[in-house]
Image (cartoon, rainbow, N blue to C red):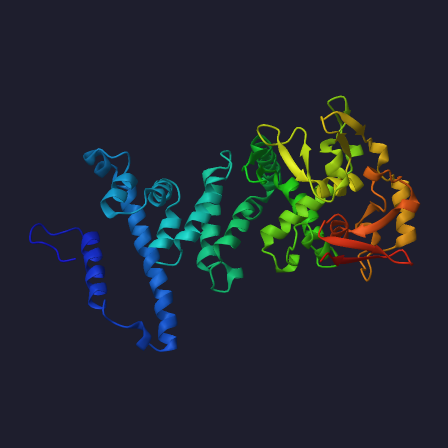
Length: 435
């Protein structure tokens, strides 16, 4: 940037011009020709230079409200975004950071100006300092600022000359009062946690949006404690110790869960978690214990093909549909009320919850079968479903003689119309794909 003749520019302007001219002079230089040690030093110095430039930009933005006024812009970030072809969404937070550093946290700015505190570290420190309670006096606030800056630059005794990463500063920033004001830290921590929990409860939400293609998008905002519990349960269900096979079976021809992306494996685990939910522990809903009502035609029920309707579906018109095989599988384990309809949709049979296997029966099955009874399967009985040999739709009773334990994978195979099941003399099941 070559300066035009005229009044002598401010030294800040001269320094920026000198930096730009110096960088232009090496625009055609190839960093590949540097030695490994030189490249390491160069990268470190470039980050420090970038930090110094960022601090100078923040300092200039904090003092440039008149520029926005002169050009009729909402703020200097909006003006600069338009002038420099930069996203205003990036500059506006930096504008607020600039004002905060300029007005409240000068040590943060001073450390950035020497290139010893990165922009990311500064953002983290300022966020922690701004979160300090108002009743903390100015002296304690200055002590907290000095402590966090020293941790960021590596000047603190425990740092060994190396500054801490932003994620570590974030953790220490939440506990900085333990160091600078231990006498009030515990009380303030309790206040902060209470405020956070209150906000989390206020923000709690579950939204369901049917996508119209057989899937529904569920968006949840949960308190940390609840989300941690959910993550723990899902992690247990995605454990490779036997449960992988079960989860992989939740979609036809699904790959093994350990090969799935993490978000898909957790989605399978969430479905399994709902399958295992005990409906008897839920409150009454609509005058009866919580149930899912499935309507299915008698011919579809008897055939291996067909579809069933879900009453009170999340779809806007209540027209949710599942396969008949899925309905038969749910009837083995979930608290499903299967409303069987004749040719004119008259109700032929309304199954009741007591048709399901009782906890006592499941305990007996666990003692008898010990594992999934599919040939060669070793999934423990505690991870298995109770399955009717003769389906309830064909008059099969819910008793031990008509029951067998199957893991999720083989339970799906038992209801999969593309597979045949052979019951072996020892009671095991053998599955083979139909030709």
